[in-house]
Each structure stands twice: as structure tokens, then as C-alpha cells.
Amino acid sequence: MAIHEHLLDEFSAENRETVRRRSLLPMWIKIFIWLFMILGLVSVPLFIFGLIGSGFYIELYGLKSSVPTSFVALFLEIIFLFKCVVSFCLWFEEKQAIRLGIVDAAFGILVCLLCMFDFPSNVGIQAQRSFRLEIIFLIAYLIKLIRVRARWESAESE
Image 1 (spheres, rainbow, N blue to C red):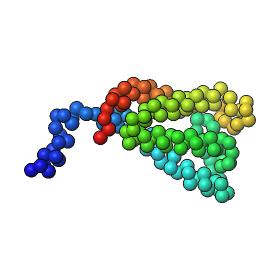
Image 2 (tube, rainbow, N blue to C red; image 1 turned 90 degrees about the horizontal axis):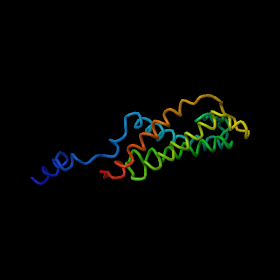
Image 3 (tube, helix red, strand yellow; image 1 turned 45 degrees about the vertical axis):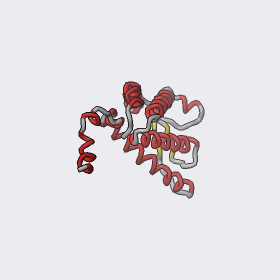
Image 4 (cartoon, rainbow, N blue to C red; image 1 turned 90 degrees about the vertical axis):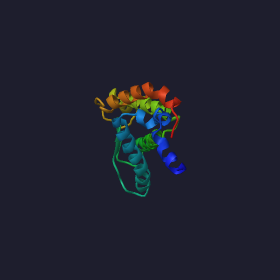
């Protein structure tokens, strides 16, 4: 009988009131979480293949490179790895995940703005000067994280 009581504890009124941190995020953020977890994990072997001579093309926020050992490629690899860490923290409901996500979004917005106003070309970095659609998602992401921050930090992870 004790086993059945334990199985049904999930449906008790006390447990229904607790909120899973992950449920605070909208579906579109969850999709991007999975996308960046996969891209971040794939970026490590791509970088290694790039070091042994294979080429690849990488682009984000208007920065682009086809030379794996260039400064831009290394910079973008670091960004992808950071986004992967943030995504894992968000998916696994770490308490500091929202703070990391806010840093990620603010940094992404800054890089997008710099690329939109042709700053990278002024310092010799290849970038595409155009309106960056990523900035729309980054701003929405930042706003959502700021709005959910208090509830996220006060919620208990299950």
C-alpha cells in the first residue's frame, strides 16, 4: 500500500502547486534550447576537424568564417559552447540558468548591433552588414527571461 501512496503523491494537491522551472519557458525557447545544445556539442568535433585540415563554414550574428583557425571562427565556437552551457542549464533547471541566459541574450544583442552598424569591418573582421533577424529573437528571449527570473529563482527544481 505504501508503494501506491508514493506513486500517487505526484497528483496530490501539495505537489500540484509546485511549478517546474522548465514549464515557465515558452515552446519557442525550448526549441532553441535543443537547437543550441546540439549545435554546441557538434561544434567541438567540427573545430577538431578544422584543426586537422577540414574546412567548415560558421556564421552567427552577422559574423562568419570559413577558416576554422581564424579569430572569428574561434570566437563563434566559444559563443556556441556558451550557448550550449546556457541551454543545458535551462533544460536541467539550474538556479543560475536565467542569469546566464540574460548574459547570453545581452551579449548576442550587442554583437548583432555591432555587426549591423559595420563595426567588425572597421577592425578587419569579415561581417555581413545588414539587419539581423536574430536580434528580434534575442530581444524577445531577454524580455522573457527577465519576466520569469523571480519565479524561476524561487521555484524548486524537481
